[in-house]
Length: 457
Ligand SMILES: Cc1cc2nc3c(=O)[nH]c(=O)nc-3n(C[C@H](O)[C@H](O)[C@H](O)COP(=O)(O)OP(=O)(O)OC[C@H]3O[C@@H](n4cnc5c(N)ncnc54)[C@H](O)[C@@H]3O)c2cc1C
Image (cartoon, rainbow, N blue to C red; front, side, top):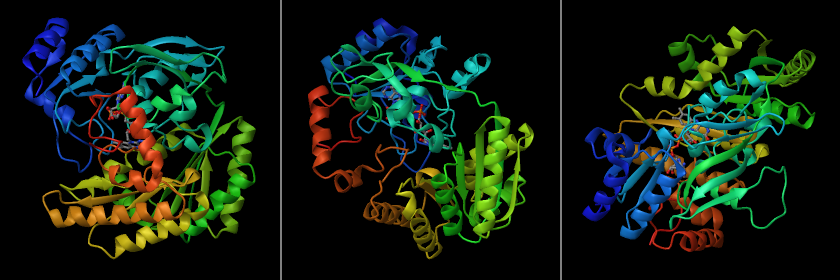
C-alpha cells in the first residue's frame, strides 16, 4: 500500500500521469512467462529526470517500493511488484537526445526502444546492434544486461553502454562514465548499474556505442546430423577467424514446429541459421568458407543468400519462434530456460537437456545463440496444472545445475528477476553477499525493486 500522504504528493506532482486504473496495474504486474501477476499499487509516467528524482524522494520518505518499467518483456518476473508500490514507466521518456556520428555514440532516454533508435539512425549509416528479439526499451535492456542474436559479433549491453545518468534511491542524480572510449578513473559504476535490474537506482539516460551499418549482409542455413556436429562447426569457424554476426541453433523439434506453423520447409534435424556482415566480397567469402566447414561436419542443404527478402523471411521466422512455439500448444505458458556454458561444453549440455525433456511429459523445443554458448528450452506447460509447472521447474533447475557444473551461468541474458534468485548463492558464493552489501549501501531501506536479485531480508 502507498500511504495517503505519498499518494497526495505524487498526485500533486504528476496529475493524470499517476494511474491506479485496474488494467494499468494488471498490465504492469504481468510477466511474459509463468510468473504470477503481481501488480503495483500505482503506476506513474514521468516526463524528465527531475520528475523521476522527485518521485524517488517522495517514495523514499514513505518507504514505498519503486519498480522501473520499460516495455515489460523481461521473462523472469523482473518488473512485477511482489511487495506492491509504485511502478515508474518510462513510456514518456523515449527520446533520442543526441547523435554524435564522429564519436559513434548516441544519447537516449531509457524508454526509447531499440527499433525506434535504429529507425532514427537509418539515414546516418550507423546502427545499434543488440537484438533481444522483443522490441525492448534501451533502459530495460541495460538494466537486464540484455543481448540476443548478434552478441557473437557485437557483444552484449555490457559492451555498448558508455555512460549512464542514474537517479539513486535518495533522489541524487549521478552520471557514470564519460564520452571517452576508455578511462581508468575509479570504480566502473556504469558496469555496476548495467545488469542491476532496477535494484540500485533508475536509469534516466544512456550513452550508447554505435556501429557502422554493414555494406552487405548474407544469410545462410544448414541442417546437421547432430547437435554436436552443428556446434563443432561453429567452434571451428570461430577458431578460423570467421566472424558471423548471428549464429542461431534450432533443434529438430523447433524445425518441425516452424514447418507446421510458419511455412518453413526444414528437414526435421538440428539447424544453424547464420548471418554475415561486411563488404560484398567479405560476406560471400565468409558464407562460402562456412559452407565448406558444414560439408566436413556432415551438414546438408547448406545455402546462403544476400537477397533482402530471403534474409528477412529467415530472421522474422527466428524472431517470432518463441510465439510460434507457444502457439504449438494452445493455451500453454512457457518456462524459458537461459543457461549459458563455455561453448566447448554446449553440445553436451544441449544433448543432456534434450534427453531430460524427452523423458518428461513437458514439451520443450530448444533454440539458442550458439556463438555465445547460450541456449533456451521453451518448456510448454498448462499453467492450471501445478504438476506440470513443477516438472518444468525441475527440468529448468536441472539444466542450471548442470550448466554451473560446466563452469556456466544460470542466466546468459534474461537476468535473475524472481526466477533465478534461488541459484544466486550457488553461482556466486560469497560474491552474492558482496552484491547485498552494495545494495544496502545504495538502497539502505530496500525500496528499489524489492524481492529481486539480492538476498531477501
Ligand atoms: C519473445 C522474447 C524474446 C526474448 N529474447 C531475448 C534475447 O534474445 N535476449 C535477451 O537478452 N532478452 C530477451 N528477452 C527478454 C527481454 O526482452 C529483455 O530482458 C529486455 O532487456 C527487457 O527490456 P524491457 O524494456 O522490456 O524491460 P522491462 O521488462 O520493462 O524491465 C526489465 C527490468 O529492468 C528494470 N528496468 C526497466 N527500465 C529501467 C530503468 N530505466 N532503470 C532501471 N531499471 C529499469 C525493471 O525494473 C526490470 O527489473 C526476450 C523476451 C521475449 C518476450
